[in-house]
Length: 142
Image 1 (spheres, rainbow, N blue to C red):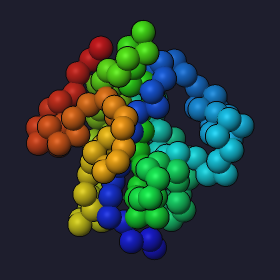
Image 2: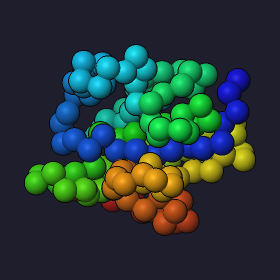
Image 3: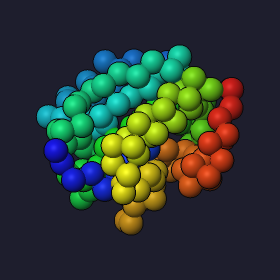
């Protein structure tokens, strides 16, 4: 088992109707990645798809992937492409369940957003993870 130090939350920075297949295609054919960017991806209806077992390394945050589990929701931008928390209530609930599950498995792991890592200049996951964790009620329906 890998030494997991981070549970990282992401958004896909795509419209919510984007398919998982097209996201995977982007990673493979545009970025040339062999492994996906996340271990789990959450659809707008809350369905969770495992893209990679947590024992394997995903391409979520350069320099931190060996020690991270990556969880993403589909969305994270407004219609003009600007960063926006577009999580549905179902996505928020599924994300909370995954985080709780892996916090039990890896109690010392820090939960943070992609943007919270040093040197990262992104809005991902388009919400304040620390605030969300403090309240667990930072879920909304769009």
